[in-house]
Image 1 (cartoon, rainbow, N blue to C red):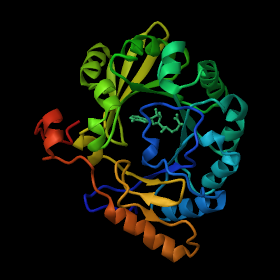
Image 2: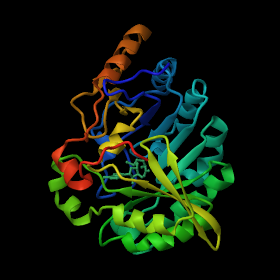
Image 3: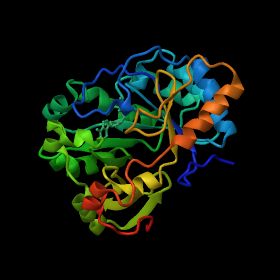
Image 4: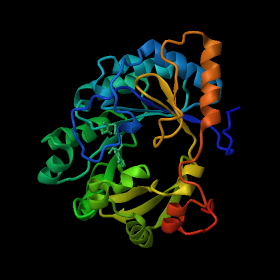
Length: 323
Ligand code: SAM
Protein backbone atom coordinates (compact mmCIF):
# COMPACT_ATOMS: atom_id res chain seq x y z
CA UNK A 1 0.00 0.00 0.00
CA UNK A 2 1.43 3.41 -0.90
CA UNK A 3 1.61 6.28 1.56
CA UNK A 4 -0.78 9.17 0.97
CA UNK A 5 -0.11 12.81 1.79
CA UNK A 6 -2.60 15.12 3.54
CA UNK A 7 -4.09 16.00 0.17
CA UNK A 8 -4.94 12.40 -0.68
CA UNK A 9 -2.11 12.03 -3.20
CA UNK A 10 -0.32 8.66 -3.15
CA UNK A 11 3.47 8.61 -3.42
CA UNK A 12 4.22 6.16 -6.21
CA UNK A 13 7.52 7.35 -7.68
CA UNK A 14 10.90 8.83 -6.81
CA UNK A 15 12.76 11.49 -8.78
CA UNK A 16 16.41 11.11 -7.80
CA UNK A 17 18.89 13.89 -8.52
CA UNK A 18 22.35 12.31 -8.78
CA UNK A 19 24.51 15.43 -9.00
CA UNK A 20 24.43 19.15 -9.62
CA UNK A 21 27.25 19.12 -12.18
CA UNK A 22 26.28 19.64 -15.81
CA UNK A 23 28.19 20.14 -19.06
CA UNK A 24 25.37 22.37 -20.41
CA UNK A 25 24.40 25.82 -19.18
CA UNK A 26 20.72 26.15 -20.11
CA UNK A 27 19.80 29.66 -18.99
CA UNK A 28 16.34 28.65 -17.74
CA UNK A 29 17.45 25.56 -15.80
CA UNK A 30 15.74 25.01 -12.43
CA UNK A 31 18.38 22.43 -11.43
CA UNK A 32 15.59 20.30 -9.98
CA UNK A 33 15.31 22.87 -7.20
CA UNK A 34 18.80 22.21 -5.80
CA UNK A 35 21.97 23.68 -7.25
CA UNK A 36 24.09 23.76 -4.11
CA UNK A 37 26.99 21.34 -4.29
CA UNK A 38 27.37 18.90 -1.45
CA UNK A 39 28.70 15.44 -0.90
CA UNK A 40 26.77 13.26 -3.33
CA UNK A 41 24.83 10.19 -2.26
CA UNK A 42 26.82 7.00 -2.80
CA UNK A 43 25.40 4.07 -4.80
CA UNK A 44 24.89 2.19 -1.51
CA UNK A 45 22.99 5.10 0.04
CA UNK A 46 20.82 5.42 -3.05
CA UNK A 47 20.04 1.70 -2.97
CA UNK A 48 19.09 1.87 0.69
CA UNK A 49 16.67 4.73 0.26
CA UNK A 50 15.15 3.14 -2.85
CA UNK A 51 14.57 -0.08 -0.92
CA UNK A 52 12.75 1.82 1.81
CA UNK A 53 10.65 3.74 -0.71
CA UNK A 54 9.79 0.44 -2.36
CA UNK A 55 8.69 -1.00 1.00
CA UNK A 56 6.27 1.96 1.10
CA UNK A 57 4.78 1.18 -2.29
CA UNK A 58 7.05 3.16 -4.63
CA UNK A 59 7.79 1.21 -7.79
CA UNK A 60 8.90 3.79 -10.33
CA UNK A 61 12.08 5.90 -10.50
CA UNK A 62 13.26 8.82 -12.61
CA UNK A 63 16.97 9.69 -12.52
CA UNK A 64 18.02 13.27 -13.07
CA UNK A 65 20.82 15.78 -12.29
CA UNK A 66 22.79 18.04 -13.00
CA UNK A 67 23.72 15.68 -15.76
CA UNK A 68 23.36 12.20 -14.30
CA UNK A 69 25.52 10.47 -16.92
CA UNK A 70 28.54 12.48 -15.76
CA UNK A 71 28.64 10.28 -12.66
CA UNK A 72 31.19 7.57 -13.22
CA UNK A 73 29.19 5.14 -11.10
CA UNK A 74 25.97 5.67 -13.07
CA UNK A 75 25.76 2.08 -14.31
CA UNK A 76 26.24 0.71 -10.79
CA UNK A 77 23.57 3.09 -9.46
CA UNK A 78 21.04 1.88 -12.02
CA UNK A 79 21.73 -1.77 -11.27
CA UNK A 80 21.35 -1.18 -7.53
CA UNK A 81 18.02 0.57 -8.07
CA UNK A 82 16.88 -2.28 -10.31
CA UNK A 83 17.38 -4.77 -7.46
CA UNK A 84 14.29 -3.27 -5.80
CA UNK A 85 12.19 -1.58 -8.46
CA UNK A 86 10.25 -3.80 -10.86
CA UNK A 87 8.43 -0.85 -12.47
CA UNK A 88 9.75 1.77 -14.83
CA UNK A 89 13.23 3.23 -14.33
CA UNK A 90 13.94 6.16 -16.62
CA UNK A 91 16.47 8.96 -16.85
CA UNK A 92 16.44 12.52 -18.10
CA UNK A 93 19.73 13.42 -19.76
CA UNK A 94 21.24 15.83 -22.24
CA UNK A 95 22.44 12.70 -24.02
CA UNK A 96 26.04 13.69 -24.54
CA UNK A 97 27.40 10.54 -22.86
CA UNK A 98 24.76 8.16 -24.22
CA UNK A 99 26.59 7.08 -27.38
CA UNK A 100 29.21 5.58 -25.03
CA UNK A 101 27.04 4.11 -22.30
CA UNK A 102 23.51 3.52 -23.60
CA UNK A 103 23.97 -0.26 -23.90
CA UNK A 104 25.51 -0.58 -20.41
CA UNK A 105 22.65 1.43 -18.92
CA UNK A 106 20.12 -0.82 -20.62
CA UNK A 107 21.92 -3.94 -19.37
CA UNK A 108 21.95 -2.49 -15.84
CA UNK A 109 18.17 -2.16 -15.91
CA UNK A 110 17.34 1.30 -17.26
CA UNK A 111 14.10 1.14 -19.24
CA UNK A 112 14.08 4.39 -21.17
CA UNK A 113 15.40 7.93 -21.47
CA UNK A 114 14.18 11.48 -21.92
CA UNK A 115 16.73 13.39 -24.00
CA UNK A 116 16.67 17.16 -23.75
CA UNK A 117 16.85 18.88 -27.12
CA UNK A 118 15.62 22.44 -27.13
CA UNK A 119 16.24 23.32 -30.74
CA UNK A 120 17.10 21.49 -33.97
CA UNK A 121 19.03 24.57 -35.08
CA UNK A 122 22.77 24.85 -34.30
CA UNK A 123 22.75 28.53 -33.40
CA UNK A 124 19.67 28.43 -31.19
CA UNK A 125 20.89 25.24 -29.56
CA UNK A 126 24.12 27.01 -28.67
CA UNK A 127 22.31 30.09 -27.41
CA UNK A 128 20.11 27.96 -25.14
CA UNK A 129 22.62 25.42 -23.84
CA UNK A 130 25.90 27.32 -24.09
CA UNK A 131 27.43 24.41 -26.03
CA UNK A 132 27.91 23.26 -29.59
CA UNK A 133 27.14 19.63 -28.82
CA UNK A 134 23.93 19.29 -30.85
CA UNK A 135 25.54 16.55 -32.97
CA UNK A 136 26.20 14.46 -29.87
CA UNK A 137 22.59 14.89 -28.73
CA UNK A 138 21.22 13.76 -32.09
CA UNK A 139 23.58 10.79 -31.97
CA UNK A 140 22.30 10.08 -28.46
CA UNK A 141 18.74 9.71 -29.73
CA UNK A 142 19.92 7.09 -32.21
CA UNK A 143 22.07 5.30 -29.60
CA UNK A 144 19.17 5.20 -27.14
CA UNK A 145 16.93 3.65 -29.78
CA UNK A 146 19.58 1.11 -30.74
CA UNK A 147 20.12 0.14 -27.10
CA UNK A 148 16.37 -0.29 -26.57
CA UNK A 149 16.02 2.61 -24.11
CA UNK A 150 12.58 3.15 -25.57
CA UNK A 151 10.28 4.87 -26.07
CA UNK A 152 12.74 7.76 -26.23
CA UNK A 153 11.13 11.03 -25.23
CA UNK A 154 12.55 14.29 -26.49
CA UNK A 155 12.23 17.02 -23.87
CA UNK A 156 11.68 20.41 -25.45
CA UNK A 157 11.19 23.44 -23.20
CA UNK A 158 9.15 25.91 -25.25
CA UNK A 159 10.61 29.44 -25.18
CA UNK A 160 8.80 32.50 -26.50
CA UNK A 161 10.40 34.17 -29.54
CA UNK A 162 13.23 31.66 -29.37
CA UNK A 163 12.27 28.09 -30.29
CA UNK A 164 8.46 28.11 -30.70
CA UNK A 165 8.82 28.06 -34.46
CA UNK A 166 11.01 24.95 -34.17
CA UNK A 167 8.02 22.85 -33.09
CA UNK A 168 7.01 21.67 -36.61
CA UNK A 169 10.59 20.50 -37.28
CA UNK A 170 10.70 18.85 -33.84
CA UNK A 171 7.54 16.91 -34.74
CA UNK A 172 9.26 15.63 -37.86
CA UNK A 173 12.42 14.77 -35.95
CA UNK A 174 10.45 12.90 -33.33
CA UNK A 175 8.69 10.95 -36.07
CA UNK A 176 11.93 10.19 -37.90
CA UNK A 177 13.45 8.88 -34.67
CA UNK A 178 10.41 7.03 -33.41
CA UNK A 179 10.41 9.29 -30.34
CA UNK A 180 7.70 10.94 -28.27
CA UNK A 181 7.91 14.73 -28.31
CA UNK A 182 7.40 16.25 -24.88
CA UNK A 183 6.63 19.97 -25.01
CA UNK A 184 7.41 21.49 -21.62
CA UNK A 185 6.28 24.83 -20.25
CA UNK A 186 9.03 27.03 -18.76
CA UNK A 187 8.31 26.75 -15.04
CA UNK A 188 9.42 28.67 -12.00
CA UNK A 189 8.33 29.47 -8.47
CA UNK A 190 6.24 32.54 -7.60
CA UNK A 191 9.28 34.82 -7.14
CA UNK A 192 10.88 33.54 -10.33
CA UNK A 193 7.93 34.83 -12.34
CA UNK A 194 9.44 38.31 -11.90
CA UNK A 195 12.82 37.40 -13.35
CA UNK A 196 13.91 38.92 -16.63
CA UNK A 197 14.37 35.50 -18.31
CA UNK A 198 10.97 34.25 -17.31
CA UNK A 199 9.19 37.40 -18.43
CA UNK A 200 11.04 37.32 -21.71
CA UNK A 201 10.74 33.62 -22.55
CA UNK A 202 7.74 32.11 -20.78
CA UNK A 203 4.87 31.28 -23.08
CA UNK A 204 1.59 29.54 -22.33
CA UNK A 205 1.35 26.18 -24.07
CA UNK A 206 -2.45 26.27 -24.15
CA UNK A 207 -2.82 27.76 -27.67
CA UNK A 208 -0.14 25.36 -28.97
CA UNK A 209 -1.93 22.46 -27.33
CA UNK A 210 -5.28 23.54 -28.76
CA UNK A 211 -3.78 23.56 -32.24
CA UNK A 212 -2.17 20.13 -31.85
CA UNK A 213 -5.35 18.76 -30.30
CA UNK A 214 -7.37 19.98 -33.27
CA UNK A 215 -5.01 18.24 -35.68
CA UNK A 216 -4.61 15.06 -33.64
CA UNK A 217 -6.29 11.74 -34.29
CA UNK A 218 -6.60 10.78 -30.62
CA UNK A 219 -5.58 11.53 -27.04
CA UNK A 220 -4.27 9.48 -24.10
CA UNK A 221 -3.62 10.55 -20.49
CA UNK A 222 -0.44 9.82 -18.56
CA UNK A 223 -1.08 8.82 -14.92
CA UNK A 224 1.67 11.11 -13.59
CA UNK A 225 0.27 14.65 -13.44
CA UNK A 226 -2.65 13.75 -15.71
CA UNK A 227 -0.64 14.79 -18.75
CA UNK A 228 -2.38 14.57 -22.11
CA UNK A 229 -0.63 12.83 -25.02
CA UNK A 230 -1.89 13.54 -28.53
CA UNK A 231 -1.52 11.18 -31.46
CA UNK A 232 -0.56 12.95 -34.67
CA UNK A 233 -0.36 11.36 -38.08
CA UNK A 234 2.37 12.38 -40.51
CA UNK A 235 4.45 10.92 -43.35
CA UNK A 236 6.51 8.86 -40.92
CA UNK A 237 3.56 7.30 -39.15
CA UNK A 238 2.07 8.27 -35.82
CA UNK A 239 3.90 10.70 -33.50
CA UNK A 240 2.93 11.14 -29.88
CA UNK A 241 3.10 14.63 -28.40
CA UNK A 242 2.92 15.23 -24.67
CA UNK A 243 2.31 18.52 -22.93
CA UNK A 244 3.77 19.32 -19.54
CA UNK A 245 2.04 22.43 -18.22
CA UNK A 246 3.00 22.87 -14.56
CA UNK A 247 2.99 26.64 -14.18
CA UNK A 248 0.15 27.95 -11.98
CA UNK A 249 -1.61 24.66 -12.64
CA UNK A 250 -3.48 23.09 -9.67
CA UNK A 251 -4.53 20.13 -11.82
CA UNK A 252 -0.87 19.30 -12.44
CA UNK A 253 -0.07 19.46 -8.71
CA UNK A 254 -3.20 17.51 -7.74
CA UNK A 255 -1.90 14.58 -9.78
CA UNK A 256 1.70 14.72 -8.54
CA UNK A 257 2.64 11.31 -7.13
CA UNK A 258 6.40 11.74 -6.76
CA UNK A 259 8.82 12.39 -3.96
CA UNK A 260 12.17 13.91 -4.84
CA UNK A 261 15.63 13.08 -3.57
CA UNK A 262 18.40 15.65 -3.85
CA UNK A 263 21.98 14.72 -4.69
CA UNK A 264 22.99 15.78 -1.19
CA UNK A 265 20.65 13.29 0.42
CA UNK A 266 17.42 15.04 1.30
CA UNK A 267 13.82 14.11 0.67
CA UNK A 268 12.31 17.02 -1.22
CA UNK A 269 8.56 17.37 -1.19
CA UNK A 270 8.17 19.69 -4.20
CA UNK A 271 10.40 21.10 -6.95
CA UNK A 272 9.36 24.60 -5.94
CA UNK A 273 10.16 24.36 -2.22
CA UNK A 274 13.24 23.75 -0.14
CA UNK A 275 11.85 24.66 3.29
CA UNK A 276 10.33 21.20 3.70
CA UNK A 277 13.45 19.25 2.67
CA UNK A 278 14.24 16.41 5.06
CA UNK A 279 17.96 15.53 5.18
CA UNK A 280 18.79 11.85 5.51
CA UNK A 281 22.43 11.55 4.37
CA UNK A 282 24.43 9.65 6.96
CA UNK A 283 21.36 8.03 8.53
CA UNK A 284 22.07 4.31 8.40
CA UNK A 285 19.37 3.03 10.74
CA UNK A 286 16.55 1.66 8.59
CA UNK A 287 13.77 2.51 11.05
CA UNK A 288 14.98 6.11 11.32
CA UNK A 289 15.15 6.38 7.54
CA UNK A 290 11.59 5.08 7.32
CA UNK A 291 10.44 7.73 9.80
CA UNK A 292 12.09 10.46 7.73
CA UNK A 293 10.47 9.13 4.56
CA UNK A 294 7.04 9.19 6.23
CA UNK A 295 7.68 12.68 7.55
CA UNK A 296 8.54 13.92 4.05
CA UNK A 297 5.34 12.41 2.64
CA UNK A 298 3.30 14.06 5.39
CA UNK A 299 4.82 17.45 4.48
CA UNK A 300 3.90 17.22 0.81
CA UNK A 301 1.61 20.00 -0.34
CA UNK A 302 0.51 21.10 -3.83
CA UNK A 303 2.38 24.29 -4.77
CA UNK A 304 -0.53 25.50 -6.90
CA UNK A 305 -3.96 24.89 -5.40
CA UNK A 306 -7.51 25.70 -6.49
CA UNK A 307 -8.34 29.14 -5.12
CA UNK A 308 -4.79 30.43 -5.60
CA UNK A 309 -5.05 33.92 -7.10
CA UNK A 310 -2.36 33.43 -9.75
CA UNK A 311 -3.67 29.96 -10.65
CA UNK A 312 -7.18 31.35 -11.11
CA UNK A 313 -5.81 34.18 -13.22
CA UNK A 314 -4.42 31.55 -15.61
CA UNK A 315 -6.80 28.62 -15.35
CA UNK A 316 -9.97 30.23 -14.03
CA UNK A 317 -12.11 28.72 -11.29
CA UNK A 318 -13.03 25.59 -13.21
CA UNK A 319 -13.41 22.42 -11.17
CA UNK A 320 -10.17 20.58 -11.67
CA UNK A 321 -9.65 16.90 -12.12
CA UNK A 322 -11.88 16.69 -15.17
CA UNK A 323 -10.03 14.90 -17.96
N1 SAM B 1 20.76 17.42 -17.50
C1 SAM B 1 19.63 16.57 -17.66
C2 SAM B 1 18.80 16.99 -18.85
O1 SAM B 1 19.24 17.87 -19.60
O2 SAM B 1 17.75 16.39 -19.08
C3 SAM B 1 18.80 16.40 -16.42
C4 SAM B 1 18.47 17.58 -15.57
S1 SAM B 1 17.38 18.76 -16.32
C5 SAM B 1 17.11 19.87 -14.97
C6 SAM B 1 15.83 17.87 -16.46
C7 SAM B 1 14.82 18.46 -17.40
O3 SAM B 1 14.27 19.64 -16.82
C8 SAM B 1 15.38 18.86 -18.76
O4 SAM B 1 14.55 18.37 -19.79
C9 SAM B 1 15.29 20.37 -18.72
O5 SAM B 1 15.13 20.92 -19.98
C10 SAM B 1 14.08 20.58 -17.84
N2 SAM B 1 14.05 21.94 -17.25
C11 SAM B 1 15.07 22.60 -16.66
N3 SAM B 1 14.69 23.82 -16.23
C12 SAM B 1 13.39 23.95 -16.56
C13 SAM B 1 12.44 24.98 -16.38
N4 SAM B 1 12.74 26.13 -15.76
N5 SAM B 1 11.19 24.76 -16.81
C14 SAM B 1 10.86 23.61 -17.43
N6 SAM B 1 11.72 22.58 -17.63
C15 SAM B 1 12.98 22.75 -17.21
